[in-house]
Length: 275
Image 1 (cartoon, rainbow, N blue to C red):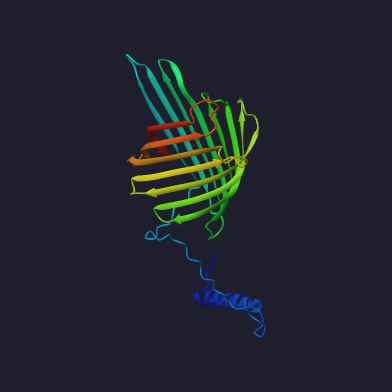
Image 2: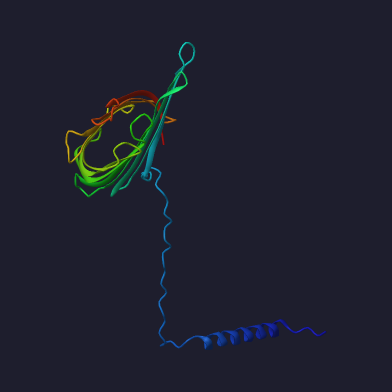
């Protein structure tokens, strides 16, 4: 094979380079054609949470507690007493729904001496920056040792927050409604008024006092009335388990007992678990 001289190869390479350059120049747009400016967009910085800023936990809507108390004796005397309670509350910025259940049963020498249950519920409407509230309230009262089997009551009314401090609250309520005794000598629907008071004071982070009172007279005969008062003291004994000791006193008075004692007094010491 014949070898070409070096200068011949150099001229051929230069000729090919010039031809390629002319081809690229012909493909470029004319000089007077508009050229769109190049816009540089800065990338958005990634949101990195600040470890020094503490975010508040979401507000709990539901809260409540379970109560349980047992005591008894065996030997010359045989007694057994059991008490169970449950309290549930759902609170938002505009309303409060509460439910309270209390059950007590007592026996002596295998004979029942008390067997009663009380269910109390309330739905309360709140208003922005106002101490006034409106509510619907009802109770179901079962007592095996009363002249009636079950007594139901319902009322509608207004509430007013007298004190709303960090550790102390005091509210009064006024309402009107009716009560009806089932399985008793009086089967009529009785129109009633209801004057109520709720007090709560937190002594410390581990102790709390609470008291409630309700005066419920018959509208047609104010000498016929019912009175319910309750007071309690709670002591936190285990913070991790939310376990407390609760001492309470409950008194119920009925001016028309139908031949029975008008007053029922219950006092108890129970373990209280909050959730």
